[in-house]
Length: 338
Image (cartoon, one colour):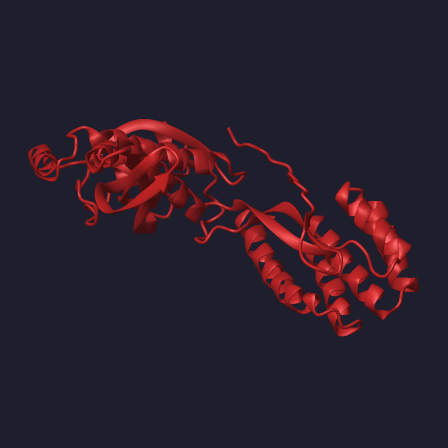
């Protein structure tokens, strides 16, 4: 089912240099890199990465030392990651199906597209507007280097490796008979293990299933973030004081306890009564408050005042950041049909 999420604010003031400035953290939603037509509100996920020639796949597994069933399991973990990523979005209703179909079995070459009748049939079966298909998958693991570290417990040897997952996805829109996305990418994860001898370190490292699983799950999440808006953690500087100005200090404290109305009131008082430096800092803090509240236009206005009228240098770059966020918000509103 479609899940609804509220803004989750996690505020952790952290000392950040001189001038009484600190960091405040909050979550914000960013648009997907790929714009998906808004008529697509539900997705069905299928696995079309089953090798078209099982004999060649077995031969490759023997020659590379991979487990014969390794990729079969890993593709399901890719789809777990994709399902997790899409399921955290308010954009779609998602159905993780058990459909498995033959594709190319290659990490780089796509098979011929699915027949549109088959796409329509699957979408009807799962009550979906579009079909997300994993069509290629391959994985690899190599040992890269090692290091020796001496400690109280003696010398320990670390072996390092890289797990690489190659995935290819297609997104089918049956209503318009359009392949909205055909995207192939590689995702890498570093892996490390240690032991008292080289053999022990490498022996542990070569038990690589965990590395491939981690890389596969992450690859699925990566593709999900390509086609759905995502939540990110943002941090901003704010000011806690300005030469003993009581209003600015009060406004900062209200920010730290998420009391936004009283923070705005106190900071406005600081702008009206403070000296030029206090005005700049209070205006900057007001920009931060309004960004957290989602009023980006008001945030940009205060950031512009903080730099343009009061000369607060930190607010200059902050104004550019808010301009970018305003543009991103317009794209996000389009993607969410707002």
